[in-house]
Image (cartoon, rainbow, N blue to C red; front, top):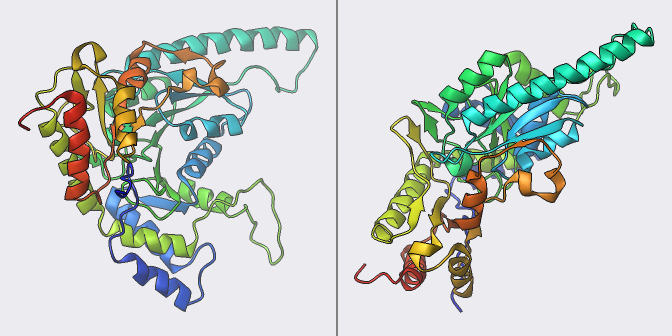
Length: 403
């Protein structure tokens, strides 16, 4: 039986064991240690971020970013609807309300025009709520200053499948209303927007090193910022917020979010081959485009202009069943029958049962992408035999001849 081809499995670079061995030889296997410190420095060089905190996951990084931005129950956080739930879950952790914004068709990322519409409409709603509270407060002679509605505390933008969002337009909207931005670059390490690596165009950036990402530490993530004080505070909160005292003392709630020295060692080895992995993923994307260039009804997630440079973590296509002669699900099942993993595009958060009651500003883009889109196997360790098996399925399903 042929070996299964996964969507994007870990691809070791060869240097990982050197750093892991150093951790074991020194008996420094617990959270923190020399590998963590070095990994943070090396991530700073690789991304251009001035300061980095290595954490247990990308989700932890989003959570800490929102904590640092003061998100509390009753507040609102605007997020991308077309994403994985880990982008939005931390908003709910803090008791805030996610406001979900649909995509624009060029990058599949947050639509700047819908973002501004969401800000205006939620702000109007909050103004009404606050006025009602003030009236009630006056009647009750409540001078405590507590109560009332919250406010929009943050915007969480995703660089989906490695494709940079339209950060120039998004940041212009955010700056106009004074709302800080968090870039979820979990899928986009090494991608660039206007010559700068993503995650460094806003108040905070977050990365993920989960097992299926372009590089992995087996798990883990990072929080990026140019503000040293914010990263210092993030490290404090991520280490159970232990106060400087000879005993265990805690003045605020903390979290067990720091990366271990062993995991950081794997990450350091992986980071050494990041540029190679980006090159391999981009080449694989070009291979798919060449194979499918004459197939009607198939389009790719593509860079809208030279300002955008995607790592193409995953190569994603959209199939028009009325033209292509097949559809997303038929192709996925054909891959599955051949022992090849593919995956539908993300189901938008505004369609997810857990978030269905949240405010949502939609234009139909993400719903169409979900209905007709497929992530193709994109691992940098898929060899020539693997590509031949993938091509066989694609040729059969799309009736490609002489390719």
